[in-house]
Length: 305
Ligand SMILES: *[C@@H]1O[C@H](CO)[C@@H](O)[C@H](O)[C@H]1NC(C)=O
Ligand SMILES: *[C@@H]1O[C@H](CO)[C@@H](O)[C@H](O)[C@H]1NC(C)=O
Ligand SMILES: *[C@@H]1O[C@H](CO)[C@@H](O)[C@H](O)[C@H]1NC(C)=O
Ligand SMILES: *[C@@H]1O[C@H](CO)[C@@H](O)[C@H](O)[C@H]1NC(C)=O
Ligand SMILES: *[C@@H]1O[C@H](CO)[C@@H](O)[C@H](O)[C@H]1NC(C)=O
Image 1: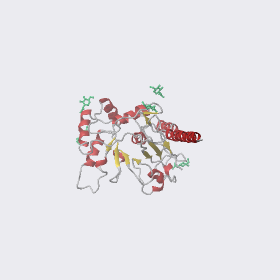
Image 2: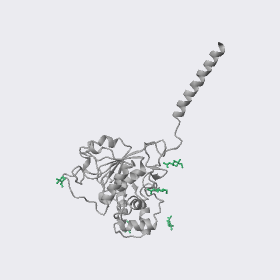
Image 3: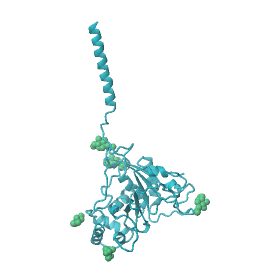
Image 4: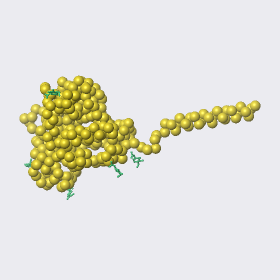
């Protein structure tokens, strides 16, 4: 009798251990480490799961960046600007006397999921009520003259990064990162003139300690690799989206494309405008690429109301 009882107890303990072990192994981490903690990470091992596009290591310039002559020559002619590479290097080093030497660029971390909202300026945002969802993301990136005031319910209130270039500049608050695109030598002088303290100026255009300058080599990479050299160069909107894929693991895209009537205009325009204005940019190629990225779940695309 006694032995039977003992055996029964032994049986129970062994089963308990097996059940417990089963639970433990169920919760063990997967063998393969993912590069981020989102449902999907855009660049696994540095490569996009679609079209073999690779992560560009220096999307922003730093004081020690050394632009190659090849990249400089591509950059110099896109807006038919002048200047030599030595002038470029000299003038860019002047800019870097005024701004931080190394812009922050966090690499993906297995345990984290950094989310971005890229907010374009399309009228399709009107009545979308996306505002709270946009503000919920870690970073909110606005483009050119994109702003919130008066449109908070549809476009959100927060702006962590504002992407702009000389001709599209706008006044930023002290906590927003200015992400600057340069297209010609004169843009370098613009940056230095804006950043130099001047008594006549009431408020500077933006906080110089937060400035980030997009690497011209990255702009060229986007044109060559992401758009297969279509058009002259990519639009600021498209480049902002690729940039977002480099600073976030999950990218939500709003306010790109036409509105539901097929009109292309800004959400703040009084009247819709049915002219598609893409300048030298390959508008359709860009749009199709964005759609393909959305189909392959590299980013999430929101069409508006
Ligand atoms: C990334 O690389 C690791 C190690 O080389 C490998 O185990 C994993 O399968 C790769 N992931 C993808 C999505 O290619
Ligand atoms: C991506 O690269 C791999 C290996 O280099 C290659 O086998 C594959 O065909 C490429 N895919 C595309 C879509 O280019
Ligand atoms: C930048 O690179 C070029 C060639 O790649 C080299 O000749 C030059 O010395 C470099 N300049 C600096 C400041 O590192
Ligand atoms: C470089 O900066 C200086 C000083 O701002 C300016 O005079 C010069 O024209 C700039 N060079 C070019 C090629 O724009
Ligand atoms: C906007 O689109 C509608 C429908 O296509 C059109 O009737 C209207 O004229 C457009 N508005 C403007 C200002 O072009």
